[in-house]
Length: 207
Image (cartoon, rainbow, N blue to C red; front, side):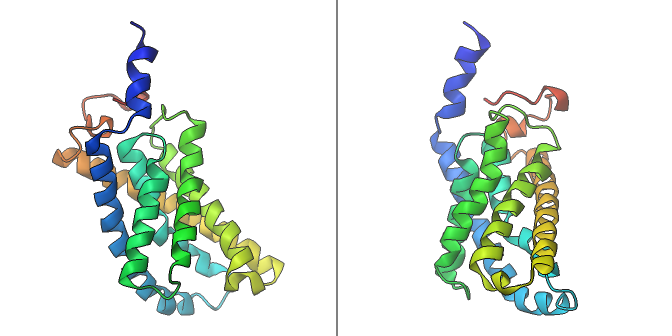
């Protein structure tokens, strides 16, 4: 039996533990999303000296999809986790209401596309900030066209987009560190992401 025939079902078929873990990560992230929303107004005010720099805060809403994708390592994990987080934050109560769900789905898709391009096979460190940057691109497109940022001049919009992408990349790095910490604790023993004995260069196939 070839390696491909062994690994393909595990990549595309979600186990109960995958669903439960992604949901738990999403719920926990949603609470953090809500808290970050409370901090957004004072923090964005501090950055108002240069229109567009508030994009640096975007990463606070992007990490859930990256984290879910890195842990579960299966198609749809990034979108699912980010969307659950968005639903939880909306239910708790945010100033953006249920529009948060649209942002969550598309932000998760931004990270998901990076994992998909790599066929859910490559899990080296650089994939995390790249997925974060993908989510940053998604939120930059949304915010510069469908939020208050749409009223900015072109230069400020560009600054916002670059800031959001950088913030997303940073969120990716932090998500990677979180996964490593969870792996060391033994919490991810049932996932390929928790296999501490696998060399980094060999982390290409999920289980």
